[in-house]
Length: 72
Image (tube, rainbow, N blue to C red; front, side):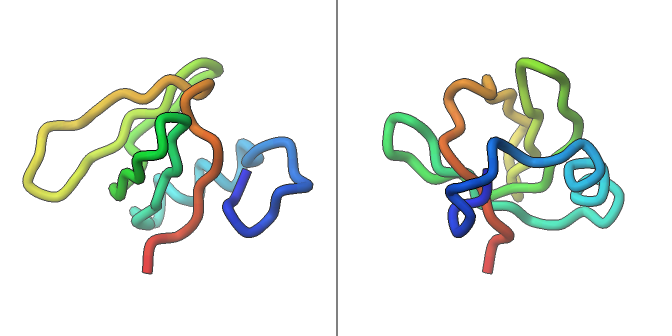
């Protein structure tokens, strides 16, 4: 679900695929209050893999993501 769209249940598969294809930088709001910025590498029903600039990729459980949006 995007940070600005709290009525949506979550990102559509097509939207996530577009983020990967276009290498769009995303900002994830996590349940612990942290924010993570990176490019989505892959996703499945339970997790997202995100590449952060200059860092190794990280895997985030979907249940830990409260919201997301395009990074500015």
